[in-house]
Image (cartoon, rainbow, N blue to C red; front, side):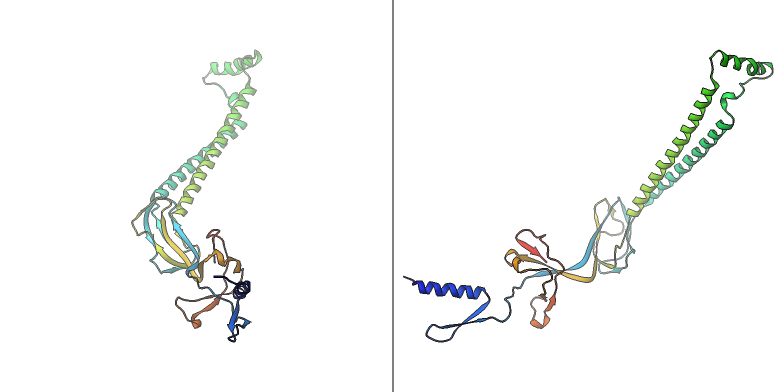
Length: 281
């Protein structure tokens, strides 16, 4: 079967007209066609999922047993409300022990400061040796001066060493206080992690635990979402990607839906998280 060049040219022209959104209608039996602009752009229906505007999954940060659960799925809470609490008895015991260590370190620091002041105003190098009566008096009057004269003893060096030793004890006590304070801050952070509060006004979408369950770090507790505003998540094929633009108005409605049930929606964002072959609205 032979096809004339004229027929091929007519078929190609009709294909281009149809792709450009034009309608073609036959007006007579002589093979004449009327080409006119079609009304409205062609539409494509895609399925999507309604998701909350914000959604977070609260997970356990410390091991423990669940001792408090605020509610069940569908219960709404305001920002800052306690949702889940783990047993913190062990953490409180560690904190009390650290507070006791802090009190001991503070006492050592104050004692070291007092010994340093004593060394300044009453040096141990000049203290009288033990003894009584004439032996003690003889040591103070003849023995110490003789030792200094012959170079066997230096009271200045002894006093400097005593002052340095007192200063070292002060620094050690101060470092001990800083270490214990750091341990207390670490325990306080774990105590905060044992309590999961609502990050914003929202609703419990799903809970994974019950009171009495034993949790380990990383295990999910519940899903909390902000449902005041909703968004539609749609996977768009790659062939429709060139026709999408930021801020484009799209029609959204339930499936199946009539024209009256549809409404215009502006997609908040167009991302390529679905991969190279599709876009996600």
